[in-house]
Figure 1 (tube, rainbow, N blue to C red):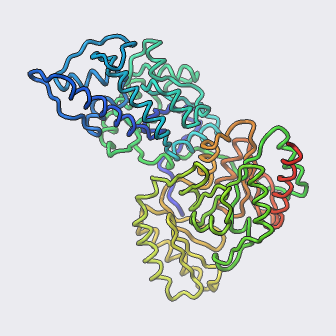
Figure 2: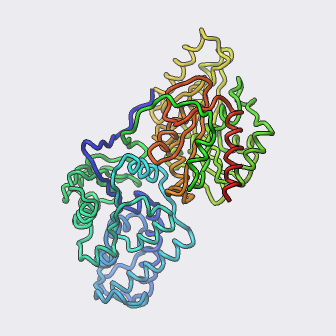
Length: 519
């Protein structure tokens, strides 16, 4: 069985969660560091050196963490320059970028940052966005607390502004005259805006200054987010727990029930009366019948045509355990979105995600595949499939007497590779990176990235396997609809059940027709 997540959040202890922005939710820390370096290096080259001054270049790693990370911009400018023996007047917030004051240099850095942001866009941590969705689905209040004065721009560019109930950024801190991190003022202000006592709030921070601020504010749970090997420093400054992977945070969920058979398709189209559909589909067992060999799961021409029509009428994504290129080749429709390896890699128009947190396990997956090939070489019918982010062992064609031997081999291999976790499905064992990322997190990420997580969208997920239950759970709490494909009644987090892939095709055709009539 897979290991339990590192941390579980429960409403028995926590009511709200406060997120730092750069380095926790967004990957803009590198953009910030680059802008700081360009600004400081340019200024130091321009300035006439005086006795006692150090004009060596700004170190985008060491100097960034030591002097500017997590601090108000003007304080960061001052701390770095003082360390270099340079003392400048503070100046005025309206100073132009070429004025030799703390404000002038700060405004120059901000100008460089905004230019870079427009060019490069905002990259998100997929696990963080998925966590935000899970928290909100479970009824937690959320806030973003950051020293950045570009918070509004970053959230808008990333399309995640609606995931926060409150925000306290550098602009608000200045307006309210709040002390920046490592003082606790901004965190306390955010807690007040969420009507939550600090002891009932959790804080996620990647900067030492932020962890110190949360500890000073006596917050109920301080989670250090280690993005660059700062685990020990975060612990020393008061983090209750330090994680390098927010997918390992579990949010208590809901129980499964037995969904009724969907005999009236208008029950689904009726829910679309004032909404647009966003359709997510598993491949094996959903778009095609289950077959003995995975390579024989070929899409019928009728299903392909129905999918083509659906993609013209609504957003359609295939979310599969297969490798991305494999499932994209099998479907063969460029107008659709593809999520492979249970969402570890996603491609589509203007979409490109490969989950960074899983790359560290690639060597373990290679070794596990080699080990399993050796251990199962004598088991007739066992088929080992090496995927980019998984190793699958198919045993549909294995004699019942040999099934236990296959399971023992997989369990032993998993135990030898602690970066991997064992999962399963219909006649399949699988080893994946030990990260709490799954189809549900992938669907949440897609909805957010595509701007489809509003009240005017009905997300629908159709799947047949236990790996699809994560997606059913993810949609259940956000007003979406899960549909299980199964011949017999079975417990599931889905809302309805279809018998087979032909029923799936009929439902898709009905949805396409409903969309056409509604235009």
